Length: 126
Image (tube, rainbow, N blue to C red):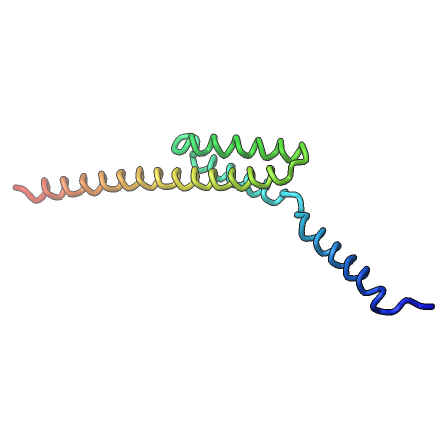
């Protein structure tokens, strides 16, 4: 006697559900997050983060190092979390660095304008 559809339906549904749940539970390794964190740290370093945002940059470097260690140890959740934190701190270091550079350039330009005003005032006097 052949099994009826009702008899095979439950095991089939259970197998499909188990397959779906196992695929949802597992995330791919955080290699993309690690690469993004490395790039963010490099970008902050290139923007003179060591000079203008040393604390944030050092925090990002430490988190990136711990993320790489966690990845090597097989702790992908910690690697992902630390990579995201490293990227965020590196982005903050980059932004602070860019702000400091822009502020310095603004001060320099304001000094140049003030000097031009002085020259114009002295040239206009007899």
